[in-house]
Length: 400
Image 1 (cartoon, helix red, strand yellow):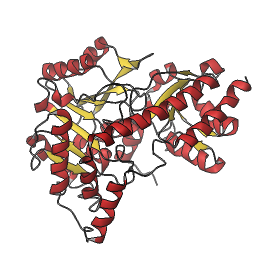
Image 2 (spheres, rainbow, N blue to C red; image 1 turned 45 degrees about the vertical axis):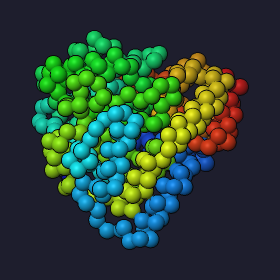
Image 3 (cartoon, rainbow, N blue to C red; image 1 turned 90 degrees about the vertical axis):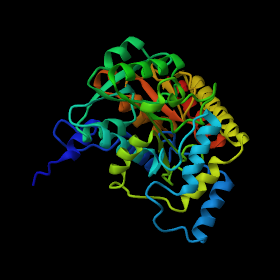
């Protein structure tokens, strides 16, 4: 029996539909399975191997013990919504109505799904940067939107402004950006962000910003698009607690936006998960109230981990590109004689006892070919794990 349906275009949008119509596993699933099967160090998937702050974990335990285990309110518990609003004011000077302009979601992925499914209709164009997180392509296709991309160019993974101007048209419904950017570790310049706002006004588009790595930025304070002149009324900001508090499995995210946009998104969101994470919501609220020293500390800690892994990759013979944020650093394997990063990643467990993912997995075919030798490594691991991975990767240079 043939099983047709929207799942096919969803898979195609994520790059998982083969020519014969079969579904392929994501590169993340393939590489994680390879790490498990071989015992290799998994630097492919972006999850930490250390728990978050005790204050956050203890708050979740208290909430469970106190019986906060049933459905929370549809918009999220008041404590968390007010903590999110206060966080936006504290760090960015943004004034929000916690009752009408904040929505708690099942992680940033549900926030993205609810936003795109509620605001993108058949034939609407959504512009993203490329490489792009695979969920973007899947959700745009599920909504019957048209996916348009703007390539990030080496060596600093920044978009060409003329490419941006060409990509955004009167058919553009959403300009979707991820900043700091996964998988490249780049941070968009103020000039680029201001151009995005200008283009959104010119073409009456909405701006959706995926800012889950907002506190994992290494060189300068995070600049939310919503703080820029003329952006607030048309910007939907998405973030989550998973990356900031090492609680990726809790799946507590949020959206902040003008009330009319929140109402539209909630109309769809309530039929996805409805609600989630009752005892984790007060715990994330406790995390958002931690002192400034905590947020500065997690960025500094991750910066040192980036430096350990980057140094090891350079010694192994890779060309390493600067990472300015996120969990990830990109390295070019071509100096080691590897033009095909997909094959290299499949061979790395045997060659060096390490797993990574090819950047081409985040690209359409044209840019995938251009970036065919680039590999993404995750450095959100314990220092001793990164030291061991760096030493093992050194085998590559010795075997050339």
